[in-house]
Length: 536
Image (spheres, rainbow, N blue to C red):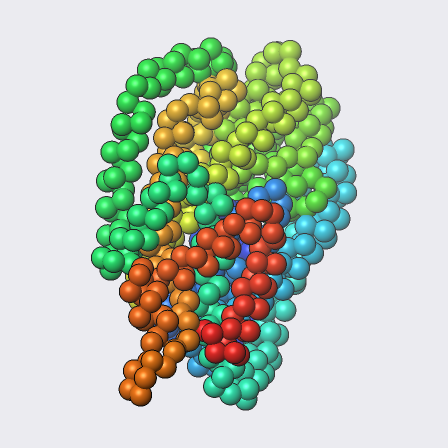
């Protein structure tokens, strides 16, 4: 690997964790994912087709990955970048690359902890700008300084690991011989069970459970790939949802009526461009200065600066008061939280027009909405939509289709930002009652239940296709006959049965409260011991 290639990999790792080019959660859903990173790493190293294939393989481990409430159990971007780079430059086969990538992802979680810790330092400077009433300087503490810090703790370590560590790790693995590589392959074949098990934690419930087994059987016995499987079960899901909710048609009308009662009487103090400017700042930089003290508080303040600058530019004391109330603790899901941006902008406008709105009113609205919106938003996007959309493109990507990660990125960006802008307008025009009512409306339930059913079906197909568990036990039955436990028993009974049992076992352990890291270590231990004694 050349110095230039290693530098580019370091910069790529920074961008995967930064707000650019797709926005805060846009980057997390796109550039942070190994499937997309594999393509970029492959381009840097001169083999995009192999890069996409390896990235998609690594992405299987993180298919059900969820980061909520400031937690980050592993860094899939570092696993994707260095895992793909190691596989391409060192000639590792797919499962071996996955086995190497997972520990790198666990190690990369330290970067996340360091970021949230050190970003706390910038909160003090933000408070100084608040007391000075200078909204034009908030970008310094929300973007400039935190991103300099982020570059230092991401780009430099990744460059060093790629340039100095890739050859060392590859040479070590090669020197350990073929048996070691075989065990790495066994580990890599089993580890996707953990990622799929994580996904099942969010969607394996209620009527969706039976669809997981149906998807598994359809893939195991009929050989259906991911896309046709998804299309078939999409049709079945629509039929099921229509039958289940056919008596609830009136709920939408009731929701509309309730929403109207919460409508705020807005004036023309704020122009559409002011609202859009606040929203873009929120969508891109809501987590740019993420920290343990205020979480997204500084990001929320930065998003509100266009609104505050327009309303209070000639009133220094009101400017300071407004900046104080919007620099408080805040934490929710990005696009769904757009509703709060719109609502609070409308409240600030009303306050400027003379409405009796206290600081406590703003705090109550924000704290009252951020929890429910986070619960719904994280469920819809991290728990269902992102994994489901990735799954639809994962099969073609694993086959080396370089268009798959590109199409996924475009589709997600459009759907996510349209959703966020719709909620921004809802919050600004309708008010808090409409937002809360929407969160409880059966239309949302239909989306969640339907996506869960389809997601379970596709997860069943993924188990059959991508979790590889096979026993090597063979029993001599005579002079010329050997009974293969895998081929003559398990495959004859249900192809992929061991893969299904392993995945359900991982799911059961995590459901009981086992941390993901411990489940990963257990699977690795089983693979190592089983590989050494000849079971796998």
